[in-house]
Amino acid sequence: MKTERSGLIKFKGNEVVVIGDDLHPGDTAPGFFCHTVDWLLFNGLDDTKGKVRIIVAVPSLDTEVCDRETRRFNLEATNLDKDIVILVVSMDLPYAQKRWCGGAGIDRVITLSDHLTGEFGMKYACLMKDVRVLRRAVFVVNHKNIITYSAYMPALGDEPDYAGVLEAAKAALIM
Image (tube, rainbow, N blue to C red; front, side, top):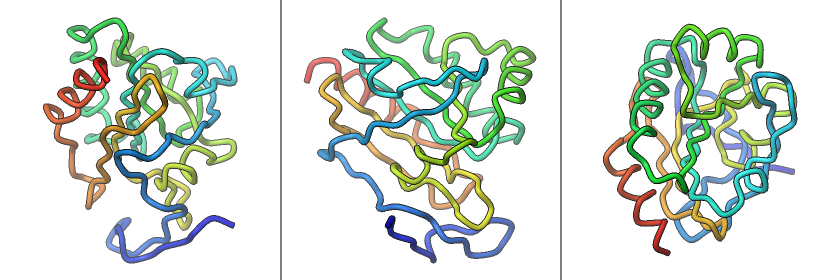
């Protein structure tokens, strides 16, 4: 049974329950499965084996902040080493992700849907149980599947420290 916690974050002004325990640098990254925009099963760690992963959890690509954040990471990806991959996970249906990515010109990050099982959300302590949406968080996972950076945003509208995330990913290349 996964831990259920409240008092961490609000959704539309109301406290919600978050499933799972927060992950920290030094923790082993949990394996997870999500779906691609074409409904193919994607193994988050095995399918990116040998790479440094920036894993971004967002509530929905169809919101202003998530749109801006995903576009920013897509732009930043053009200047990153080929051994760094960016995964953006939301509870959006793959159909909606595909439509949004096409309209936004997203081609450098991999968008993944956790809609079917919520496995990623529970394992990475991002799933807000009450509304079945992910809270905003960013993780850097090195090629040995060790978390080297983690940040949970205190409010859904808060954006991550982009420079800090990118520095952590670059540093993880030499670990």
